[in-house]
Length: 120
Figure (spheres, rainbow, N blue to C red):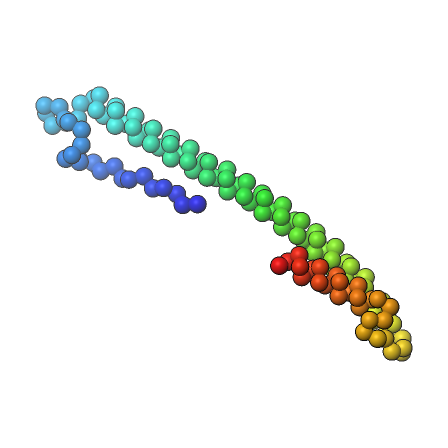
């Protein structure tokens, strides 16, 4: 979100408020200018605080989504790790294992496919 920048207040502006007879702003003009400056500053502060709150809420939501995604990744990784040793052990035991034999590869492919779909 972009912050709005308040215009600068120039000193000695010839198009400013009417001046007293001596060319110096009178006391009520100075007070009015000061009050307007304070109101503008408070408005800007409120806008910035609201922007900060919105950004913090967005951050919290993003962190929550990230934690959920990390948990889901860990669950899928455990499923893959549980399926892989069974396939490796059977093929290492000397017996020839067909690609779809025993359903281990089907399970592995299913888990990998689900993992891919979750991240798309």
